[in-house]
Length: 119
Image (cartoon, rainbow, N blue to C red; front, side, top):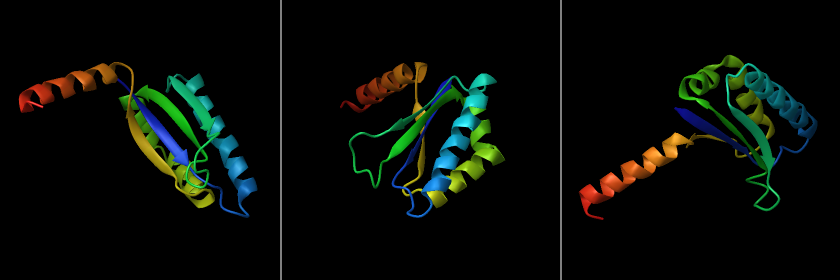
């Protein structure tokens, strides 16, 4: 089953912007390599056009099998990227996502629970 990761970040730390741009390029390279090796099925960066840009400047969406995605989050190179991100940007956060087939399964599970509880 596929899962996703949502990696969000906010405003860059003043004075460290050039390091943050370098980190953005490193992150693109890291996930592009994972995509080329077919270790992930999807990767794309996004920037917000509207938002509280101090808290939400941009995010990455990454998709792949649960096994591969777990391996990535345990990869030392990924951990270093995340540590750099938390040093260079505010509000760095990583969330697991239900994607693909899992969406239908989650809806079905919810319907069963609602029926069981009578809500």
